[in-house]
Length: 266
Image (cartoon, rainbow, N blue to C red; front, side, top):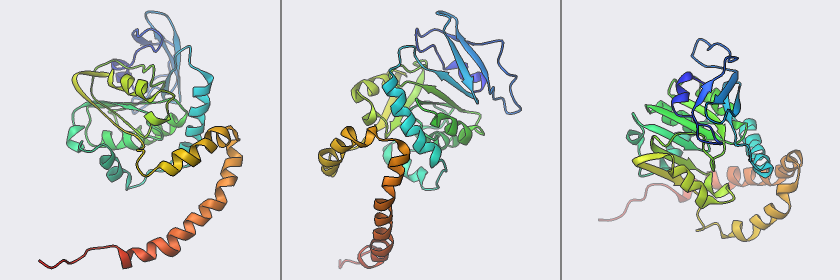
């Protein structure tokens, strides 16, 4: 973490100011403090800095939240690369916001995963972006965004966000629908925005997803969410091979035949 992050961070237990402990390692050449401790000046709670990321988890965090976060973290740590198409995808999701809406703004991101959107926003000139995630994917996000002096990654709970309500813009993409109470998650996200600021989010739509909500979700809740990750990875191989074959053999060759510009008489 950079020392500048303390301008935005607060204690998740009482909302008090955080101070850097005397045991913190000296900042590296890029200004990052890779290990140490943060202490609340009000309630004296202590929080660690691990591999450059402050871990600001509330004392009463439920274990089921940590288990869910670890499942998502495994996804982002296993498939951690960043792709060129992420930027177009991101601005499609947050439309009508454009890159200009992030420039010179204080931005809060609720649920950063591997940091793909953090890097995009930082690269478009945000004054600062503070990105929060509950899982260890935050370490991947830190690695992807360490080069940006305006990016700060934190491990924390979106329902108890350890950040001040000072942001010009808050956003969350693909996260709120995974929370036990999505409405509370949005309210918490929006509470970190200053008066007159804005909040944006993207969630799954019911339209076109009935087969998931009616058939897949019950199986996920009753069975697959209880299975070990290694077993699920093996179980995914057959359907993944089938889908890959369909895309390569039928969908992609057919795009040139059935899709593309069409000339209409005027």
